[in-house]
Each structure stands twice: as structure tokens, then as C-alpha cells.
Length: 256
Image 1 (tube, one colour):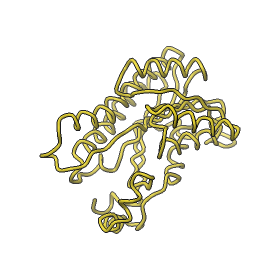
Image 2 (cartoon, rainbow, N blue to C red):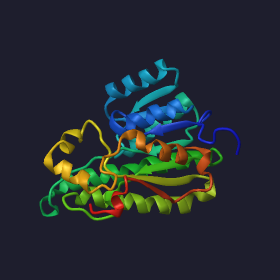
Image 3 (cartoon, one colour):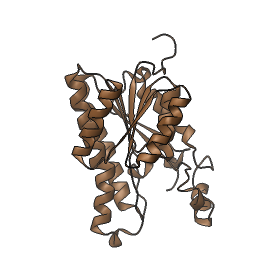
Image 4 (cartoon, rainbow, N blue to C red):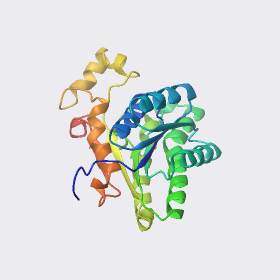
């Protein structure tokens, strides 16, 4: 390979859960590195604002409302984006939700919402994309966003941890099945990453105690995931599939 192996020029990337937080950061990052970007989530206003920002800054982006838990919604959104932007080469399965509390108190509806979004949703989008890519001649790179909570046990997050552990194993299964189509399926397992949703917690005593357990003694920032995402989305990882890259400041080597 010559030149910049992380360059995504000529590729189109679809990011789920792109209306805020890490998903919005990923969409902007991919656009800055040459990709056309398809942003999906349930909040139309936020999606179109971020897509507009990318377009005004010289990138190329389109947005589509998508409920990852609904196969019909996935089909409609993906079909529209393939029409607007052409073949989509990269999928970033980022959409996810969490719920806390002891397992004995988790309501069935709460469990279903977390597992359906984090696991079923990722599968439905990947399946839809894989069918399209296989029919178009194959190729492509899928990046599932898992978590270190899917790698080791922690209390009060049963549904979330189980769904992320299952997504990590699904990554390996899909990598095995879809290699014949030239589709690579890998994952990033972030540790604690600072976003607008959790910064208040990390300012509390409990949050500060959590930070003390991280060998680097800090939470991550969205930009700390940039290298892993660009590696897996680009041709730089052309011989990688079924792999998980952990980005956690060394937290897995310590106590959760």
C-alpha cells in the first residue's frame, strides 16, 4: 500500500446512533478523512443539523431516520441512503442504550429495550448491509461498537453487559460467515469515554473512584477512538476480520 492507508476517499460510511455523542463524532471524523457519510438515528432534527454542518465544512453527508430495532425502518433508511449516496462500503454499528440497577430489579421491558437496541439492532443493520454488498460484488468493512463491559463482569449493568458480550461474539461469527464475500467485521471495545451524558457522573465521588481504577487515571475522550476507527474502516486493516480493539486506558488490566 502506498500513500495514506487511512484515507477513506471514494468510500461511503453509514453510522448508526449518529445524532449525538460518539456517533456524531465518528460521522465528523469519517467525513474529515474523505468518506461520504450517511448518518442515522431516531432524532431527525439533530441528524440533519450534524449532516448540514459536515456539508458546510466541505464534506458530503446525508441523514435518514432509522429505528435499528425495526427491520422495515432499517430497510427504508438504508435503501434511501444507497439511492442518495451510492454503494455504502463502511458500517459503524454505534447505536446503543444502557440501563443500570441490580439484575434482580431489571424489568422485562427494560431488558428487552437494551438487548434489542444493542444486539438485535446491530444485527439487523449488518444483515441488511451484507445482503446489499454481497449482491453488489462483495467487499466492505463493518465496525461494531462493543464495550469493555462485554469483556469482563461488572455489577448493575446486566442487560448492557450481556448485550455487548453477545455483540462481540456476533462480530466473530459474522466475520467467519461473510469473509467469503470480502466483508470484514471487526469491533472496538471502548472503556469509559467522556460525553455530555456522563461527565456529570464522573464529577461525583463515585465517578472519581471509577477513574482511580483506570491505570491512565483518566476517562477517554471521543478522539481517543479515532485511530481504531480509521484503522478498521480503511484498507489499512485489509487482513483483519473478527478482531476486537480495546481502547480503555488499560482498564481491563485493572479492576472494573
